[in-house]
Image 1: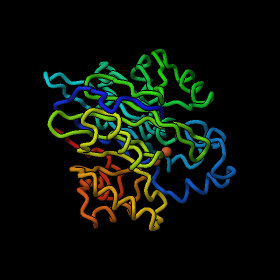
Image 2: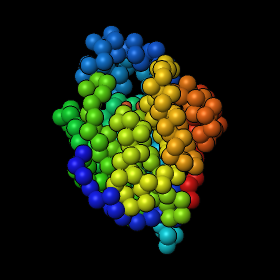
Image 3: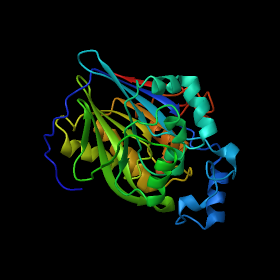
Length: 311
Ligand SMILES: [Fe+2]
Ligand SMILES: [Fe+2]
């Protein structure tokens, strides 16, 4: 990533409410990785795997990652963006209905869809969004594949599609920016968007889909890019620390390093890994527990229907 001014002023929000619509990318990890192995392994093109919505392979195991960001400006006005749109349209339709996301989309009270990255569990459920608001502006990271771009068109998208440049963050509105990080990971997926919001009195909030770029790298980006970015108030999302529940000393070092940031609120879910959250709690990090309901399987994660209220 090229250098940007360390004093980039993105403005500030009064409050940010993060609703976890769904953090259960899938229900059984062994099934997903068996499917990947059977399709040819970690370097397989994800579009070659006949999971929903392209096929019916283990459809009952497919869910998705999606969150609603509700940003309140200092004048009291509220703006909403959807962060990812999940995987299995059947599951996402149900979660959207349960949380009133369908209505918000129909009434155009959600103004944009940010796709963190192209992974199936964050992106393949896009029909659940577009059926309610085909013209919704969409923001993708650099690195999307032609198959992903074609999929967006095929699902009837009629609005603007913008690729966030990895050269500089995109200011969506005062207080909230999207940064695109080059990365290359499982199933040939490249590029990840991360949301950085600044809260007037507390500091920065960082929202990740998977955090494939590495949580410390992503936090350091905030420090060196944004005015006030050295003060990290909160993290929300998938941190990809122990998605397969394995552990090693390198990951101990990451947890140890996290403690030095002085973070006040942490909402972990999705691919963070329960092992990682237990380690974080043991080292005194302020992880907010979830309710383990609506399909979420552990209270270590901020789960489906749970809220992280900031500001
Ligand atoms: Fe993930
Ligand atoms: Fe991912």
